[in-house]
Length: 115
Image (cartoon, rainbow, N blue to C red; front, side, top):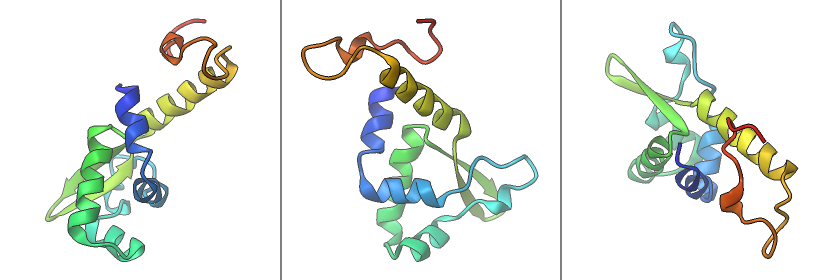
């Protein structure tokens, strides 16, 4: 996973709102429980092109998934990426990196690495 791409995607307030609105990844039978772009537009009072643009960025960062069911595309938070981000932040919080002049952020281990 591309940590920089993930955090850039999280750096926009509207994308954060979209993520908070979307449900977790569904079971294989519950795709209809996600939200389609029109529902997101309605909920956030946005425009379809703008919301679609932000969904694309979130998809490229692997923060969300989409599933097509008939003529609809439903969106969900990607549970695996959310866990990765949570683990990464936990490692950062537990590391000695506390700001400029200390251990560089590049030295942070990937969440799956052993300390």
